[in-house]
Image (cartoon, rainbow, N blue to C red; front, side, top):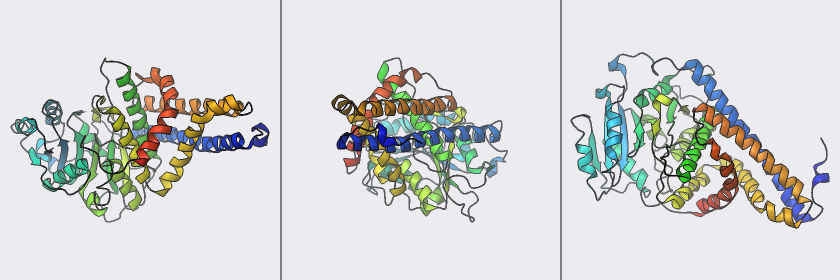
Amino acid sequence: MPDLYVYLPEDSFPAFVAGLLIASGLIYAATLLALAAGLVLYNRLRGSSLPDGGSADQHQSDLPLVSVLIAARNAFSILDKCLGCLARQNYPSDRIEVVVIDDGSTDDTENAARAWTDRIPSLKVVAVNSAYHVCPKKNALEHGIRASSGSIIFTTDADCRPEPGWIRGLLFEFNRPSPHGNEGTGPADESSPSPVAMVAGYAPLEPSARGILERLLALQGLLVAGLSAGSISIGVPLACSGRSLAYRRDAFNQVGGFADIGDIVGGDDVLLMRKFSASGRWRVRYCGDLEAAVASAPHRDGLWGRQIRYQSKAVHYGVPALLLFIPVYIFHLALAAGPILAYTYEGFSGVFAAAVASKVIVDATFAGAAALTFNDTRSLSLFPLVEAVSVPYIALVSALGALRRGATPWT
């Protein structure tokens, strides 16, 4: 291997930045390629084990009671579609409990929910009247969890449209035979009927024809789904979506629920998943079955604050994850400074060009793997634009997210 110093600028500062760029770039490339390999592994496991119908044969009386929680605020105009999808689940209706948590709505959300009691007999409407947690979303979910009785808790949002196979598809993953034993987030709990605590589901964003912004958000959603499926498959879960999530009530209670994360911005999904992972007692799985997907439209409202909130959770992932995130951030920060340094120091331009080319290659590899996994190539034409904005986005929004403190208004 040639000595890298030969290719570095002679001036100390650009040489230092170039060294950071090379070292952090290698970590970034290894991370993205590992996630792409995780998607390949996920596809192999899914293809070899998922039976027709998406669930093992069981007598109806043996099927678990599931509680579907929908935290809602001012959802009068959107709730009907979600409840209609839940009424059409191919899972016995007497084994489904639907809980709509009305968190201080000023519209007719409560009556919109109660109008479905003839089609969903088990439906409950719960009002948020206590402050268990500072974070509004976690507080609302806590009300729903306490008011429900299912052994498996499902969560989705009021604007989501779960496919008919959603409940069966995610439930299957709790008991799917594994060809590799205890792959996932840690050793099994021998006293539990299943070591799987949580199943994260595929929650695609489906853009309308209103323009490029929604398509960009849909591509972002696809990449996050790839991050979720890939990282979970290699046993280092880094992402999931509360729009499609299921977890065991006993596992939730064992790890303390939201007790120590209740004042953190967001994270009712991924921070809880990280708690399961860190416990060493439970595993996490992913369900990317398209018949179990939960679609919704991209959110255009409050976009800037929403993106910062998404990034703010990373600082709470724990030390091992931060040891990975910090070099990735340094890589993008060095890339952001790259054009100025390349213009100022002639010797820096070669290192900068090589780093950019390497990033494009590994990003394209990962994006292609995600698109193939979820059979969604519609937004890939925007990949060059995503590459152009990804460096300033990560350099700026990640920093603002890390600096953000306290809970945000309910979204």
